[in-house]
Length: 176
Image 1 (cartoon, rainbow, N blue to C red):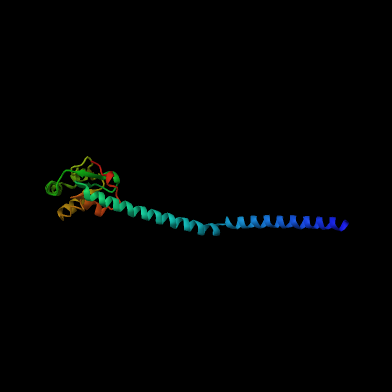
Image 2: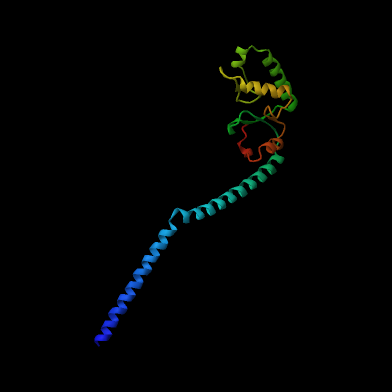
């Protein structure tokens, strides 16, 4: 009987030891997984999946915008580089050429002082202006008009033409 009690005690001690070792191994494994090295591969995989998803979404958006652009009518003028500077205009290409050539002729005749305060609206509510320190905006526009590069001046004869230059731009954001 005494021997059975001792065996039960040893079996209990061994079982408790195995449980404690299993717990310690589980804690060690958990700690290993939370190291930066272990997490970096998970992060990289997550980032690749996110990037692929974004790329697919961008491609789908561009296709949808291209389809929409073929159905839309109108002329587009881009003034500057921000989203709020893209407008529909009712000026045809010939109207735009005449208006801008006339403006370019008068801009050419301005004194340097007058050029610093000059501006032009191009048929939109927003104007392109020089500042008292910089004539770059209108000088660039003038050069584009004189070279007859009207797209460089921001004019697109159709929404489809505009979409070719800006395929990722949401056409609903063009201001009227």
